[in-house]
Image (cartoon, rainbow, N blue to C red; front, side):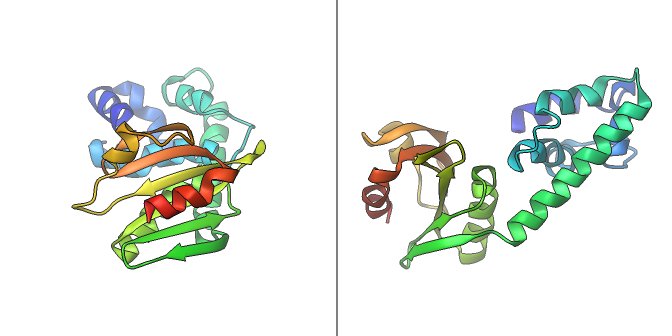
Length: 193
């Protein structure tokens, strides 16, 4: 998101940014308006698993001026996905919670695309490290998780020295995403806490 916001920031206030007004009305778009008002709307499509429009098509709508009616429909759809995402976060489904004074590990039945958003909220609210996991939608044997850390704790040990049971992982010192086999989850939760 940061890379996209920085690239867009350089060009968005020219004529090529006119479709943005369909998503967020402003006379000038800066880094914050892109990062917190535009990009989350575009990303909401993937987070709520709406296959009607891909993120690529959503981005094309931002620069395509050839069909204003089509762009209005895209904008309306994107905004409705964003509202759906917000509602899904408000109604986030927690199945189980493992908590101590330093970390909160959540198992959820919600969509995997929402894990990071919920982890951010919980980490900020409780001021402690948070990990949120849910079953991968197309493979019940895998958990997809999002981890968030509070300073001075860093996730770099997990990122740069991944445990043998990580199928995939990536991130930075404050946030990480990973996929893990369901059978290895409780060992991971024990290590993390």
